[in-house]
Image 1 (cartoon, helix red, strand yellow):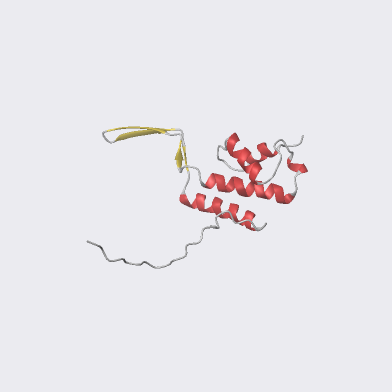
Image 2 (cartoon, rainbow, N blue to C red):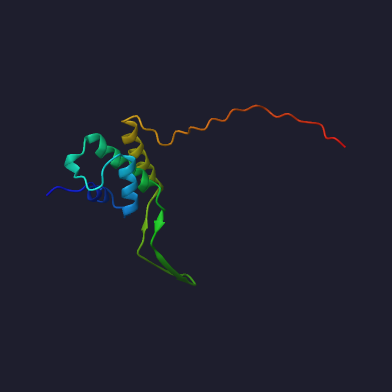
Length: 124
């Protein structure tokens, strides 16, 4: 049975990727929702992967946990914690895949042009 791109991206990492995030990834990669993985080009699939990795790298480091503490005693239930190394690795994998196709999502289009500062004398 053919696998949908949405399922493929959700199974790509151990993160709980929301449906909204998947929709955004598909829009950025110009992929029609409901497409099968086999029907996509390698470029479309890798762009989807790259944007998914970047989304995962921007998620909170600790999520969904409940913690109780009382005079030296503590207990934590559920939740996930991601290390800074994992985030850097995901970010780099995503940027590498996008760079392969000439896309640089972090390049700024704003240019600062210094013009100096003029000091005007105070008028009394």
